[in-house]
Amino acid sequence: MRILITNDDGINAPGLKSLEVIAGQLAGPDGEVWTVAPAFEQSGVGHCISYTHPMMVSKMGERRFATEGSPADCVLVGLHDVMKDTPPDLVLSGVNRGNNSAENALYSGTLGGAMEAALQGVPAIALSQYLGPLNYEAEDPFEAATAHGADVVRRILASDPADQPGYRLFYNVNFPPVPAADVKGIKAAPQGKRDATGFSVEPHKSPSGRRFLWIKGGDQRAQTAPGTDANVNLDGYISVTPMRADLTDRDHLSRLEDALR
Image (cartoon, helix red, strand yellow):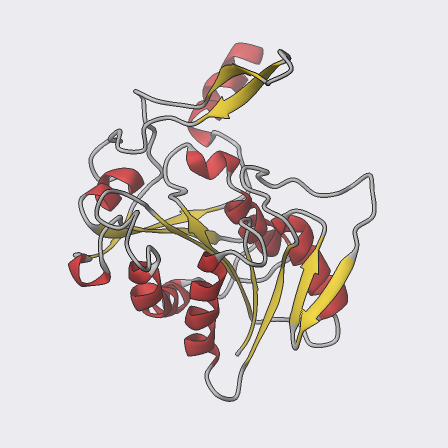
C-alpha cells in the first residue's frame, strides 16, 4: 500500500511521528509512506487552500516534503506534484494534538486535509488524540493513537463502500484521553455539539500598550449528547465518524421547498 500522510501541526510535530508509525504498519515492508506536511503550524485553518498565492515546497528527506501551505494544500501537492506518477492508495491526516470531536471538526485543518483527499477521490482518514488529565503530561501523549491507530484504520477500510457516487466518504477518528491500555474499544459515533462551550476572543495589551485579541477555546471536558463523538471519547472509547463534504440539510429540504413554493 502507498500512503500519503499530512497534518496541521507542522512537519516537526510529535503527532506526525505517531502517524508515521501507524502508516508504516499499514503499508508493510513492501509499501511506501510519503509525507507532505505544512512547514509551520496550521491549526484551525479548516479546508483552506492557498488559492491566491504560490507555495514553496521543500524536500526534507526521502519521501518527505514540507510546504508553505495548509493541510489541504499539502494533499493537493502530494496528489498532483510529489506523487503524481505514483498516486497514493490512502491519505491519513494527523495525529492531531487535541481532539477534533464535536464543533472542533468544523475548524480543523486535520479534517481539511482528509476532506480534500476525499474530494479528489482518495480514501482518507483524519486522526486526533484527545488530551486530558490522564495523558496531557504523559511521556507520550499519543500513546493511545499509536497503539490502536493501525487497527482502527484497517477496520474502517474494510467497511468503506467500493462504489461511492457523488461526494466520497472520509472519516474522523478521535482517540480518548487515556493511556493505551485503558482504551475500552471503538464506537461509530455521530458528530456531537458542546452546548456549554465554544470559541471566543480574549483581549490583551502588548508591552507597548497596543490592544490585541487572542482566540480562546472552550472547555474540552464539556459533554455532548450520549453516544456522540466527544461523549464516547470522554468515556474511554475511540470514536469513528463517517463524513461527507456535502453540507446539505436534507431533513429540512422539503420544508424549505414548501416555504418557497
